[in-house]
Length: 323
Image (cartoon, rainbow, N blue to C red):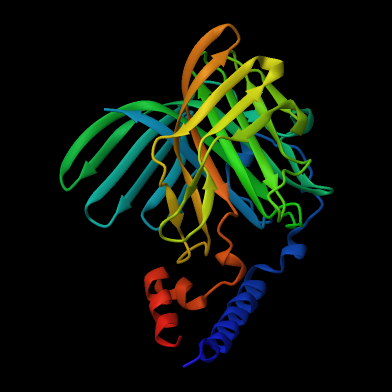
């Protein structure tokens, strides 16, 4: 039996969900209120915005042995601390307290926090590039304490996706000299970096400097092909920031850190922890990084409502039955 049987059902369900979303929150264009290019204001912009189409609070960290709620997951700010709590079923409880050790870095041109993705299209974007972290992980009744360092990205706004934004490679890098680097390539459909790719360098004292596209180089040193999705990702990079004498290699801790979120965000992407080695100025340095690679798998361009509703395994099984 042909897959043509299921495709009209998927289109009908997708159109119905789109219509429901439009009725509840309005179409994306209606969420532009004239302030989308206004600069970041803190602490106001730590919190949620009713008029933003897209926003996230993005924490990454490396551990050694604002109130936001999503089910049993919470993030809140109190007395300068970011307090995180998450659970997975009854087995796992994660709790962490993060304290910024540097001021927020306002990304984008002129240090305003307005980060342009294309002509006239921008988000508001800032980062806490180094945060002390401590907390507890409880697994099946056994609790371990941890300490380490974290990074927090906060981005929000309403911007249209263009031909120049078919994917991105995003890097947050913490160097042992106390400096940090955030860079990203916005990629077009042929994986070419857009002129709107950019970044930020933060020195050990916390001074942030905007990096234009020509202010850094990011070159892949290898490739990795997913055995599950068949997508091929860059794996390993050389990052240079000549103005600040940064020349480092970024190496995945594990090559396979692919995430299949077709049951929630409907995309497949790679993100994960990386090790850093190289030079900063005259010093040989180490460090840690977190990398996000989006757009190498293109399955989201032909979304499956059965996968979204029932998970990737059942969605694939449903299609195999009618294939």
